[in-house]
Image (cartoon, rainbow, N blue to C red):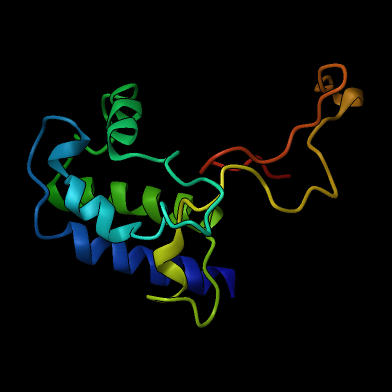
Length: 146
């Protein structure tokens, strides 16, 4: 079921991005602020704990740290790369569910931390202990998973 959800979200992202990708530049040449806002329209909803955390400007600034991201290859390759990234990251941070306004796919980037805190990602036996007094869970749109 998660795979179908991710595929549907990727298709949605591709549809929005497909009309405007241009060669070169940075990721803002592939996705505009308006498109970002359209794809992640509920990220600043009062119901989202991450309200105000995920911004278009932060996305563009972070993408610049990886100069090839969304800037190399054909037009289709560039927007597919950005769409796949947004589909995966919004899937990991979704606040949507069946019956949510605008559907479950419009609620990406709603969470910053993992909601299920029954297991942390500290593993002292393999060399990855938590700092004293701290526990680590998935953070942001690229979740830590085992």
